[in-house]
Image (tube, rainbow, N blue to C red; front, side, top):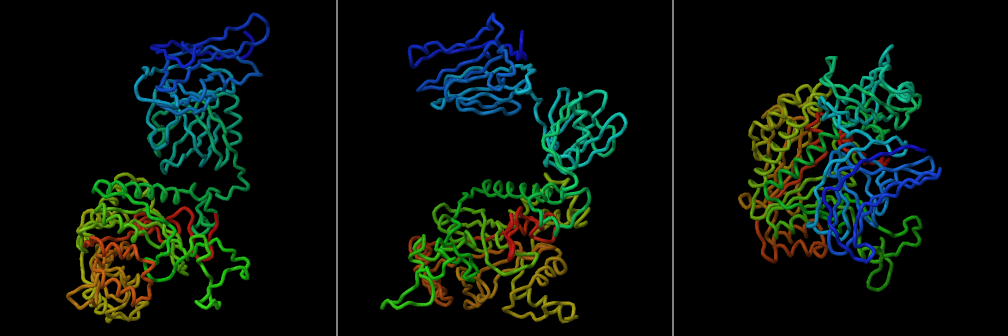
Length: 619
């Protein structure tokens, strides 16, 4: 027969009939037979009629025969009924279509088609089908395997990723391919005498950074650096990468340089490892709180409230700030213009900002659902260029009703032990890399977090320990002046955690004047301190900050007046104290600080995909 041949043998195992129109009373497979003339036949098609009230799920073992020539795309060989949706339920995914065609399938796959008006009854048994295609437009690939999950296989598999290194010898080539799922990737061994001409041509064009698709068998490796490798039977270049202009040459780059190419730095070992650890940490945080019965609440990013009372907030406005003369001016009762802008004419009818915390919103739900947590981005317009601060960062903020400060410390300790333990279990390869290149004592330090109880010390006592140590040699300290009321610096925090206690440390009962307005005053010292705590960890310093919230309405109003906060902006927050107030507590965990702590890296700008800080909002 003329043209490329596509052969799919098929056999319906079970069918069911239903109709909406007279002409669709029977839903059958329909074959357009090849014609006797010289012109190529239409493709064979399977039609699935659409029903108004029930699902038609069609699964077949086999096979369509279709004849195609250069003028017909075999990608359209499987025309499905109007508005059908194709879903993969087998080993690898294939195209979804709304009235369109399946563009690629894989050997052994199962598939269903489902009407948009679907119910779970009326299903057919799904069975495997086999494909043999020769038309270049309808390629069939073995199932894709991630390099982290590669195991010895009897059947061909596909590896897709980016080339790290290429070594060519007389009879074969070694291509290291990494798909981002692990540190090492996989070595593809390509024998020159066992592949086609296209593969040989692809090998000649391989460069570091290009993307490839390799197929073959996964076998035990002959080398000592990896346990398995891909014995490739085919290799294709998906996307080229000119070596002379690719900014990630095969050498070690500084983290400072990599920040200038943040869109490419995930291809490096360091940033890719950070991303995998960050992903594991995020998942384990959700798992912990869900397992403890907490409800996940998404609080708003745009707010009119300054949670911390520090005023370091990014303003959100739609007013035309490029034309200052057009800005509406604030006026007094007599209509006289005042300094400043009248934000009543802005989008939200008042001044609005990016939030510095989800805590206040979390409290409202805790006072209804009991235990909740938020996990999302927060923003702070602090003009800081240190390695510990970002303008945009993520916070984990649980809130617990009917709880005090001890409850918050207990929960924070359990959470940190849980998530660090999960990273130790799941990310050993990445942690080994960080231990080799950044912090040799990393794993031991993380194991101590999991195994050793956290120390708890009152702020007054911590100040005493510091004063005693600093007195020995004040010249060793950047901030030697320490007294009651001092906001502890990083060097003070790290000394307590790393030297004094050699453990994670809760410091609690801080002076009222250095903490936020919503923290509950301690009755035992006349309100000189508040029921607040910070968790200090070796290598970082402060990792968690929390408190018991002030649940007494009169006390809270008085504190807001002292700080010059407008009660009207917090009317809803005060309502929590008016209607069924309860003791409640919570804390905030800086997620990027947790990432730097677990990875052993120093700069927080390397713990997030695209760091935002003063003077930088690139990418």
